[in-house]
Image (tube, rainbow, N blue to C red):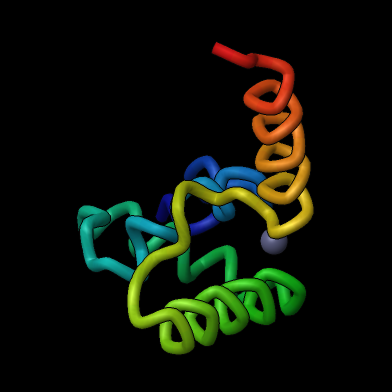
Amino acid sequence: MGDREIRHMITCRELVELVTDYVEGRLDTESVARFEEHLAQCPPCVGYVGQFRQTIDALGHLPPESLSPQAEQELVAAFGDWRAGRED
Ligand SMILES: [Zn+2]
C-alpha cells in the first residue's frame, strides 16, 4: 500500500522549534508523531530533548524563549552598555 510514502519528515531545525510545545504537550497528535518519528532516527535530537527536559526540571519552568545562555549574556551586556550611556 502506501507504506513507502513517508510524509514530510521534520528536520532537526524544525524539531528544535517544536520542542517547547512538545514538552508542554501542546502539539497535535500528528505533530507529536512526526516529532517522535524524527527522534527515532536522530540520536542527537534525543539528547537535545533530554537536555531540554533537564533544563526545565532544573529551572522549574521553561527557559525564556530559546535563548542560549551566551546569547542572553550578550544581550544583557549590550543592554547594560546602552543604559550606562544614557544619563538622564
Ligand atoms: Zn534531528
